Image (tube, rainbow, N blue to C red; front, side, top):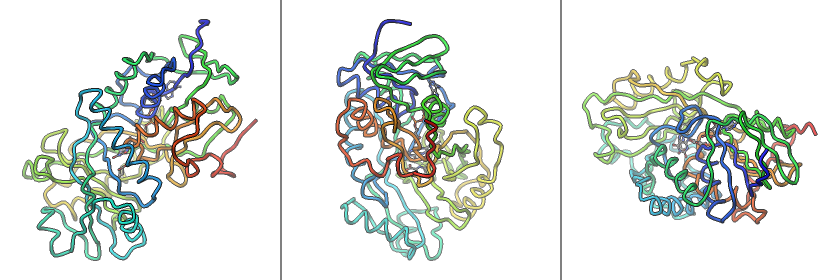
Length: 387
Ligand SMILES: Cc1cc2nc3c(=O)[nH]c(=O)nc-3n(C[C@H](O)[C@H](O)[C@H](O)COP(=O)(O)OP(=O)(O)OC[C@H]3O[C@@H](n4cnc5c(N)ncnc54)[C@H](O)[C@@H]3O)c2cc1C
Ligand SMILES: O=C(O)[C@@H]1CCCCN1
């Protein structure tokens, strides 16, 4: 074991761990970022070319965090010199008189988010090649867009290193010994840190076992489906086609969403916002395609310009909490162990602000947002502490 003691060790170099490590290094803390796989990899939750960024949320607290997150993404673009965000707008379709849509509209208005409400008659003029279901309303969050995910992850990791941070990839953490100085053992080394941040995505509970804590997290495999345009360019980012979310689609219980064709020319990404449960190390053994059946019916009904058979299917994982809100908190027993987990399929856009908040917790500072929606305590009967 080296006698070196880091100010902070971060486990997991997905978007949340990388953004946290970057914030710590920027604050001049001696920081080590450990990653089990050789980087870059496609086995967790942060890989792939694109993610949606939006302020379209029903809860004020997410909108407030997104205001700052947009600013931090813009700063990252500036510091890295890499384009990370492309504005496309986000179309939301939902049952017009449903509770979700009413709540969403009210929150958008209350927070003065630039929004265009589309009447049924003008819908097809603004959004050609999309069939709006009868009884469904539509709005556009005009500032929403696409984040270039893989590019963003690389940029943040580079900035972390250029601020003096150390990344050790291909090093799986196999043990954690809590204490005033935490000892972390990997397959090839032993490291010590005054604080520890666990941002292990789908593996959060595997690591938390070493600290006597389990969270109510469900890991699901998402089939990331790309669909071929019958006429290339119909749904292209270059034609200013927006991202979209359909809430409460008739075809399934969860949202269906899409991003304009961009990363694979002629192919549009359309996915189901849920999947089937999996062990993170056994992801490829989960072969359920019930979500794809739902998507085939949806594409056939709603997106007539796409061939209703997926042309490419990739894999990704969500780590889902019971209320779909994140976990951003200190460990209930060990105050110098910080946990960022359960991003429930919507955490990427928050990466920079989550990095800031987790770094504040690791530095013992008061976090700049009220973190009560994200506390471990909210699970009460769910969270099992074996200590
Ligand atoms: C298909 C899909 C679509 C999505 N769409 C959106 C979207 O449009 N907008 C949005 O905002 N969000 C979206 N998300 C969610 C977002 O991508 C995730 O919330 C985010 O990437 C989670 O990041 P993370 O760092 O927590 O996890 P991960 O990226 O999984 O990172 C955790 C890391 O920890 C490492 N690790 C685990 N165990 C160990 C160990 N023992 N030792 C060392 N390292 C370890 C893992 O290898 C991994 O690299 C989507 C997710 C998916 C899957
Ligand atoms: O976080 C998001 O914005 C998207 C919305 C749709 C589901 C996947 N995640």
